[in-house]
Image (cartoon, rainbow, N blue to C red):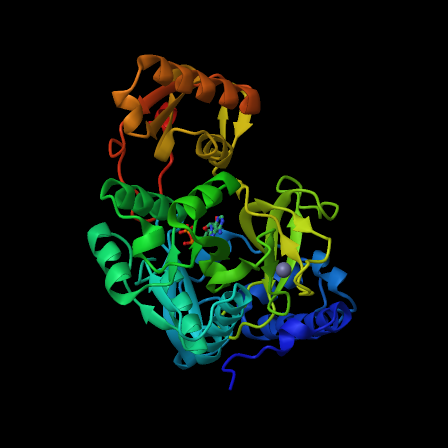
Length: 431
Ligand code: ADP
Ligand code: ZN
């Protein structure tokens, strides 16, 4: 017997869009009737919610931005009565208060269903053992994944992040086959395994890892795959949309399927709010189509990506987005050039001799300093090797960003360990 509902995955494109339209009409009416904040927004924009004819009509509606979550805080955006709410999750907010998102029983069940679909899509099955190294608590990441994996019948080890020694013994003792973890922490665990002389390919049973919560590059994926001898899949989500499992890679690892029966996606130009031509990079905007307690309409995620229009080889009709380039607010400007931390990461992780941890420090007068840990053996060898490596890093970063960085080569373990979401950019210009 199957515990999650596979039907939505087998819909044709046309059926999927019909379902989206039906759900869109419903959710727009619901929020108009139940959420005063939306009623007012729609009235101010002169929109009649009964007049929705096509999916394109969504463009007439106003965006919801993070600041909207703080209007009538904390319960103002609820579309159900408070007694139907079973769970609260929050994530860091911009105004000092955390963004609060509420789940009804149906929402909890549904978010677990979406994760179950994601995991199965990558070959996970009953009998697998998932070590969940994301933070349990107010964040969505660990809980939503936990419930989703259980739905399939997977044994979940609720490890949480940190305490790397214990993470490794859990993996060894219980035969962990899958990890749910941030990319920076996966890199860190890989370096600790290396230092301890543990060969993960021989001594662990790991098969795959689900990396999420922050952007990472293809070079980082390859690096983690090679060191741990596993398959790495990208998992994208945000608290405002249930947490993880909004977008997920399939076996082809070439873009993330968005569960379009649950989310209506648009990509807009972050500056003027216009839809960009399909395939172009912009900000991902999501409307929840199947959420009970707290539906959000045209929510601006600030995450930058593009839609991949070509059908996936796996046969799923849910369209894909490219990996997240970064958040529009992650981008930093040095010497007038826009740079995303991920561009730097991609270059570093592709260079032989570079270890797992790095930091970008921005100093006065727009000086960009890259502090990068390198393989320990290099310090025992000839100085020429170090000089060559440093030059290679400088040249490659300059070629890709047009900015010449200063590079500091460090021994592994020098930079702060990332046992959760990493802080990669230290901008001293603003301190
Ligand atoms: P916050 O970090 O704002 O407190 P969340 O914990 O909800 O909020 O994190 C959601 C954000 O994390 C997303 O909007 C996105 O920027 C980032 N994120 C999550 N998963 C991924 C991923 N796989 N790739 C890139 N970025 C991701
Ligand atoms: Zn696919």
